[in-house]
Image (tube, rainbow, N blue to C red; front, side, top):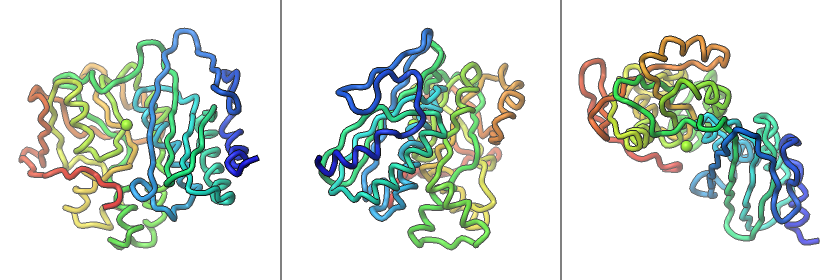
Length: 320
Ligand SMILES: [Mg+2]
C-alpha cells in the first residue's frame, strides 16, 4: 500500500454519514440520491500554500477553513450543504499533519451536516481544491442577478475582522489582549451564514458572500443585476476589536476592502423589508442595512452621510 493510500484512510470518514449517499469514498465515483423537487448547487474553491494560507498554518484550522469557504458559497445561494469532494496536492505525506487537517475537515463538515464523498491525491506543491454541493427547493436558489432599483442592501455580522487578524498574524499591527481571541477566531475559523442564507430564499432579491471585501464584491451583484448602488460607510458594521485596534480611516479601509469575512451581502425589496427582523431573529446574527440599489448601472457610490466618500478599492491580496 502506497503512502498516499495509507493517508486516504484518514479521509474515508469525514463528516456525517448521510442517508442520501448510496456510494461514498472508495469507488470510481460517488452515487448520490437527489431529493424530488430540489435543485443541486455546486461550487468549488482552491487554497494554495503561500497564496491562501501560510505553509506553517495550523492544519486543523486549514481543514476548517477549506470547508467553511465552500459552505459559505452554498449559504449565499440559499442552499443546504450536503456533499463535499476534495482534491489534494501534497509535496509529501506527513501523516501527523494530515491527521490534524482531516480532523479540521471532519469537525466542520459534521457541523454543517455534510459528508465527504470522494477525492483525489497527487504529489506536487501543497494545495487543496474542494467542491461542495448543496440542495435548494427547485427554482429557489438566490443569485447575484436579482437586485432591483430601490432594494435595500444588507450585510450580516461585522466587516474587516478577518483582514485585521491577517495583519496581526503578520506583525503589522497591535491588538489588545481582550480582542486577540475574537480577531484570531474570525481569521482562522470563519462562520458561514448557512441557516440565515436558507431563511433568505423567499426574501432576498440577490445575495453573495463577502470573500474579497465589500467594495470588491458588491460590484459583482451590480454587474449581474444591471443596477448601481450607494453605500453609506458610516453604517458599515464594525466590531469593537476593529474600532479599538485601528485609526478610523484604517478601520474603514479594512471594512471596505478586507477579505475573508464570509459574511452575506444581500438585497431586499422594500415590501419585504418589514418582516426581516422577525424572520432573521432566530439566527442570532445581526444584520445591518448599509445602502440602496440605484439605477446608475455598474456604479458603486460611497457616501458618508450625504457627502461623497472618495475611495480607491484595492483588490484584496490574501498575503500582501
Ligand atoms: Mg462567493
